[in-house]
Length: 156
Image 1 (cartoon, helix red, strand yellow):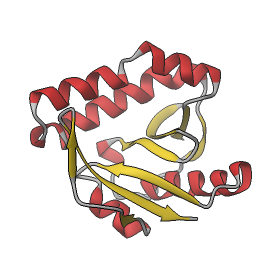
Image 2 (cartoon, helix red, strand yellow):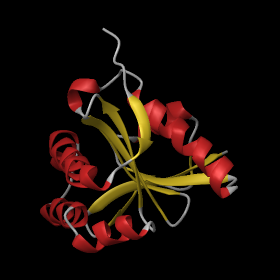
Image 3 (cartoon, rainbow, N blue to C red):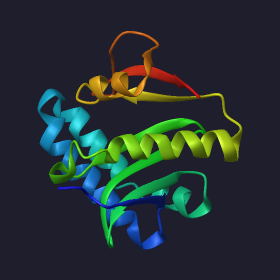
């Protein structure tokens, strides 16, 4: 079954749905390899009202994949070229949504920002996906404040 979805900038009223998707997906696929501190820090991040205010002001960008009116995937951008969050609803995995979000973001960064690269701190669950997308490791896996990640970059 083919999923018909659209990738675009998120509307204000989609913020909560997108962050809830990130939290639910994190709990399902990531939390088991994190310390309690890491899980709490991730929850604090996706529920931070300051982050929402940054989104409203345009300094923290959220792009979504929507099927009808439902958010089925999301990607956020901080510091102009760094992927902060990328999550796809579990029932939509392996349908090209993550790939479409990365492509949309890459196109946006080239055409709107003039960027030459994008970076990500890939979670253990996401490393293989990012490698398939063409990202390369910038260093070994690290842990900071209980959050486990591998620094990576993609040349645009």
